[in-house]
Amino acid sequence: MQIVPIVSRGYDSNVYVIIAGKVAVIDTGLSASRLEQRLRSVVAPERVDYVINTHAHIDHCGGNALFPNAKTLVHELDARAMSEGSFYGTASLFSTKLCARYHRVLREGDVIDLNGARLEVLHTPGHTPGSVCLYLAREAALFSGDTLFAGGSFGRADLGGNMQQLKQSLRRLASLEIEALYPGHMEVVRGREARESARLAWEIAEEYY
Ligand SMILES: [Zn+2]
Image 1 (cartoon, rainbow, N blue to C red):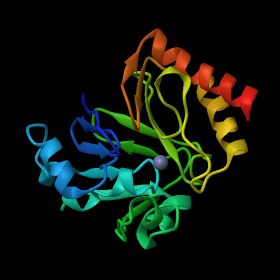
Image 2: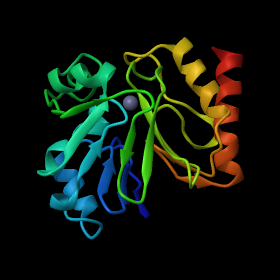
Image 3: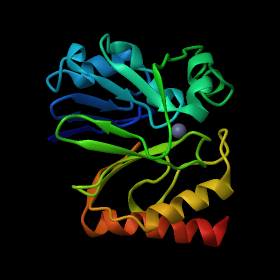
């Protein structure tokens, strides 16, 4: 199993390619054309079996259309915002009407089996109602979307989210074993920095919100 991070600049989300018996892409950035360039030399879009969106914001699902053979998965509580567009999910944020289709909805506890990598779905609402993190238990690797960032920062709750839920989600992540943190924006961290990010974020959220 191989994890290839494509760390973003600007508004694009980070994109993560997980290559095992099957290939998954976690989040797709702002647009297919932008992603096509960034993905080049990592994997051919036709080879991707699953696209998993951590949530419905357009900077995470705008490139979904790049993958002709992939099943697109998103949590059931963000599915409608993603496929129909919503005030917080699409248009108002980036002046675009783009919506992304999906094939299957995710729920807490689902496992996406890539034949050699098992991605567990953790429903972590707060940034949006249907935000999820994906967890590789064997590697203690967490793909945290906009719920948690490196260094103890976390996503906004005022773009269709809920701060009380976000606090609960951060509390949950603080009790999880995390050896590598792959967030939706900014850098990837490992080891102690990864372990401490969730605990710090939870403490900051409890103190200030
Ligand atoms: Zn977001």
